[in-house]
Amino acid sequence: MTTDTSPADDTTRAATSTGAADPTSTRAALDGPRLVRKLLPAQTFLVLGSSVDLTLTGIVGVHLAPTRALATLPFSLIPVATMATTFAASRLIGRVGYRRTFVLAPLAAVAAGVLSAAGVQWHAFWLFCVGTALVGVYGAGAAYYGYAAAEANPETRARAVTTLLAGGLVAALAGPFLATAVKDLTGTPYVASYLMVAAFGVGATAWNARLPRALDGLAVPSRAAQGTGRPPRVIWRQPPLLLGVAARVLAGVSMTAMMTAGPIAGMAMGHSEGAAAFSVQLHMVGMFAPGLLVARWIGRVGERAVALLGAGVLVVAGWAATMGSPTWAFLLAMTAVGVGWNLASSGGSAMVVGSYAPAERGRVQPFVELAATVCQVVGSLSAGVLATVHGWSRLGAGVVVLAVLVGGALARAGRRSPA
Image (cartoon, rainbow, N blue to C red):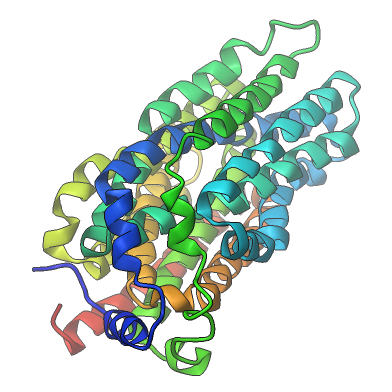
């Protein structure tokens, strides 16, 4: 079975024939597989920095927040900031290109790490919240790594996306360990952990400055290409695009809600802080390890099938959460939601990229990212209420229902039209 194709291919040819910039020459200059390899360290820096917040922010929030109900607020501000800046990141990409945007975005992580560390040092909850929110600004720019990889590899876009996700595996293993290993290097615990976020941001900026300059030409349209492409009402009637967005939404809301509530709910169920941090490490491995395998066979089974498999794994994650406090159920839920996120997100992202032409990028990308991020905000904000023994079970039931609905839609689409 081959990778799904889309009407976007016809639009690209039409745009080229009418005088728009030919993306083929830009892709040839880039060398798509080589670009993916160059983006792997950028993804690694992103995951290293993000893993610190994933591992510690909920735990640190418990100590800094005036009430336990606000403990997840700092982490919830990450997707809020992403939602608020995703359109700005898209416009910046359209004006200056992918490469320059990727150089600027990690600077937000530098500020985030410094301010978060200062908030912990001075026990200033509001300052800690500002610092963690800036991680979302970094994420808004870095979210386009996958789009750049997919657009540079139009024939193997799904493999490019999954390979890029797999690049975060080493960081997923090392990040949570480093976050806890250095927490006592300063007089105040966890200050050094958040300073690492700033250091990883510096590394990302320095590395991204070495990305090929031709990468900017992939995103900045020529004057002839501006205004070409299909109208939004036509683009957004494509079932593959809508299903891809649904898969992204499912992945985002499930992962964010369970990731945010998990460590706190785990401690409420009697697990230690160490066990809660270990669950985050398993979760991070689940998020990135499947890419090593999926990248090899996604081209054969199809993007929709991978997204459907992700929905199935998220059903398992939700079911494990409904089992309550047993250690095996808690760790299974945290690991499975990471695996499900990887599959649903990579399959959905590839379906989205295959549904638009280069000239239509600005009519699709920011809206997809906004939809996914809004749902992440909802999941993250609700996690503060659900970070209890009974709330964890209810959250699991909700994930099961949502995954069954999206998985059913993906399965019906497969029966209607062969890949």
